[in-house]
Amino acid sequence: WKLLGLMLVLLTCFPFVSYGDNPIITDVFTADPATLVYDGTCYVYVGHDENDAPNTGYKMVDWKVYSSTDMVNWTDRGTALTAKTFSWSGGDANAAQCIYRNGKFYWYVSTHDKTNPGVAIGVAVSDSPTGPFKDALGRALITNDMTKYASHSWDDLDPTVFIDDDGQAYLYWGNKACYWVKLNDDMISLKGAITAIPITKEAFGPGFEEAPWLYKRNGLYYLLYASGFPESIAYSTSSSPAGPWTYRGIIMKPTPTSTTIHPAIVDYKGASYFLYHNGSLPGGGSYKRSVCIQKFQYNSDGTIPLLTDTTT
Ligand code: FUB
Image 1 (cartoon, rainbow, N blue to C red):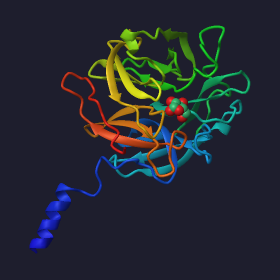
Image 2 (image 1 turned 120 degrees about the horizontal axis):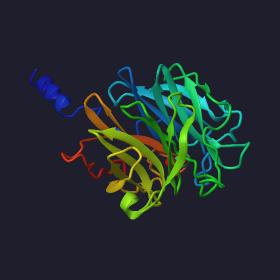
Image 3 (image 1 turned 90 degrees about the horizontal axis):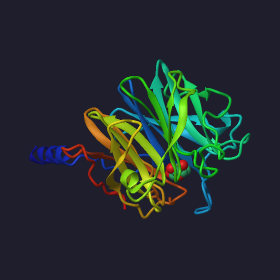
């Protein structure tokens, strides 16, 4: 009985499953995590790396969804969307984010536009967080337009979407350049013009590479993004979702296993979690990445501590 008691104490103090179990998905390669909490469940929408020849570029053709109610055990909810869903897509499935509004789920994705050169942003819609999703527009929502604002042909990458307390939705995105626009209540049309944020030291410190993630906490707006290359994750804050932004520091330094990291943050059941990807799974690397999660606590002044990629 003494031995049994000791084992119970040890199991309670040192559970086999901990929040540090990374990567969270080990049977396929996953990248570019984006979270959505809906009806008590945390969903993670991910890209899917499939390149069989390491270091020769991305092969990503679909997106997958996972769900959890404890942030430890993740259920595969299937391949909820493929680039083929968008008839105008060149077939690549880059970073994306899904959000809920008025009974529908809107999934913003970046993919090449066959009908107009360059990467574009499309939006798929569904009645369920796990699909089926259909193309909401039959064309891109944001088209790469070098004559108006675009700085290069694939800078319409990595959309992040956020709905403020007053109901106004914002879409941020970009590669090397950071853009934003308001969305109408229908979530599938633009309200006003696209703004390019000047990439200054005050706003972005060492620089803005890609992968913005916009959210609000205690009345303060946070913008996370990849900075430099290999990428660190940095963040800036603002008193408005339209900026101006003030650089706040680095959240995670580059991981040796992948040149990209790609951030998301979510509060779930009273705790905060930082999501990113690395190449730590056996056989992994910059084009075979894996989504990881770290539980963390904000500092008392609302700043985010420096986190370490625990898998390396
Ligand atoms: O997954 C393809 C690209 O890698 C994303 O668009 C970037 O954010 C980087 O993670």
